[in-house]
Amino acid sequence: MNLPISKYTLAILFTGLLGLSSCQKDFLDRKPMNLISEADLWNDPDLIKMSLNEFYSFMNTGFATTYIPASYSDDLQVIGVEEGKISTFLTGDFTSTNFPLKNLWKDSYAQIRKINYFMERALKAPVLSDVQRKEFVAQARFFRAYVYYQVFSNFKDAPVLLHAQPVEEAQDKPAKVSHKEGIAFIIEELDKAAADLPATYPNDELGRVTSPAAEAFKSRILLWAASPLNNTSNDLSAWQKAAAAAKKVMDGAAFSLQPDYNDPFLKKNVLVKPEVILEFRYNGLKGERQHGFDKNNSPAGYGGRGVNGPTQELVNEYEMKNGKMTTEAGSGYDPANPYAGRDIRFEKSILFNTAPFKGRPVETFTKGKDMPTTNASPTGYYTRKFIAEDFDYNKDPNTTSSTNWIILRYAEILLNYAEAQNEAVGPDATVYQAINDIRKRVKMPELAADLTQEQMRAKIRHERRIELAFEDQNRYNDLRRWKEAATALNKSVNGVTITKATNGSFTYAPKVSGSRVFTDKNYWMPIPLVELGVNPNLNPQNPGW
Image (cartoon, rainbow, N blue to C red; front, side):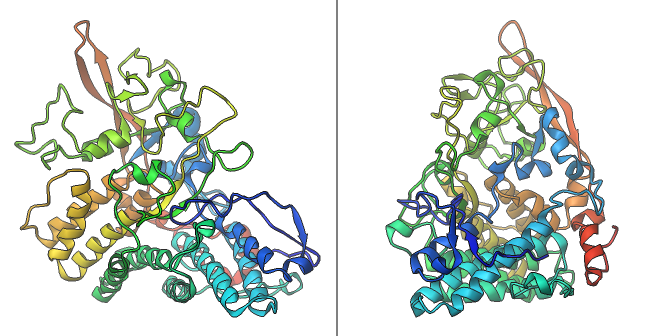
């Protein structure tokens, strides 16, 4: 899919919605320009640099919609009035004309065309120095790899276009390359980008993609390629490559875990060894970069809408502070006080009955302040993660949230390494250290020292679900790459009904809050039928469609 570019003008979009890593001064916080003549653009190095800013808006943000991507999985259930927006995800009832992310193919190739056009012009622009040319093209190359990963991770096989095909040549019908070939191309692109990108930027340019960020993103992609969905023969060399990529990031020491679990989401402008690697950035300014997550997800009694309700399945995954699951002997779990003594990531991620929030306890019991008769949380829980508790969204309806959407952070790199290394060689000391480093931050005990490879695999998958809860599309894509989605997402999701007695005590009863359907064909999206009509070389369609 290629879109024409005007011979006379090129839009410079200062949407500036994101940056990579934390920074002191957002390089995108500059007054917008509408249209610049193409001749002026390619004769001014500063304008060429600024034209790169549009590519940062190609990154994903879960704050663009009222629901967040975790609602596709078994971790969240959206309220009834919002459920229709993701119904095809929940029912698995995809068709080649109506399916989740149905515009992703068209939009991605439009973005790829813009990036290709920029790269072609930048490589030839005489006004650029060799240093500028190398850096600008490397940034564009990173985003080309990022967009292509969205294509190949959703559609499996797809064309790779390396030139901005002019509109008059649109009769060319590119053929698909295999998923394996596509991923190899993306890795090659990231290697080239990492080689030419700087490790850091001056303060007024911090936020642009760096060499360590490209290496870190490669870690995610190699883990995807090594996983059961794509590595059907369990080729151990694929796991070794994934482990090596994550280890390179760890050894590079460009990133580190921040002191508090909430720091990556609520603290901006951390310049020294930040945990955040990739993020979609917001400044909270009216008409610019802001979102409504806080109001959309706070409980009803606080003036919120409570769109995304954490499920009981996720709540059950949080260990007790002694490291035992609630069902294990000696855990200390009290069914009459089910939320006490849990992993602190629980109270930092989920709002539950009696949780302190904005000056009073949350009331999710029947007829409580936060369980209205209409549009109450379907699960009895509300999302807390990402919410800045001191932000008053009721004070001014024109002021909305400015927290950044985290795409990739260092904790994931540690988890990537632990998973890949465990699959490659088993639970050696480095696997334990990676997981235990994450657990130590939240004062959770270290893992038992005698785990088998299979037991460690289960622990790592558990830790990913807890540590990365609600972030990016991690849970949904983890279930896909593990080939576990057809099991985990083919059943109901549950919540809790809480009743308050006259003496102030509570009773808790399980309830069904929603349903999921996922079959084997849902592991890959169908290629849009309209695209098959335009380009028959995109056949065959993905299996089941």
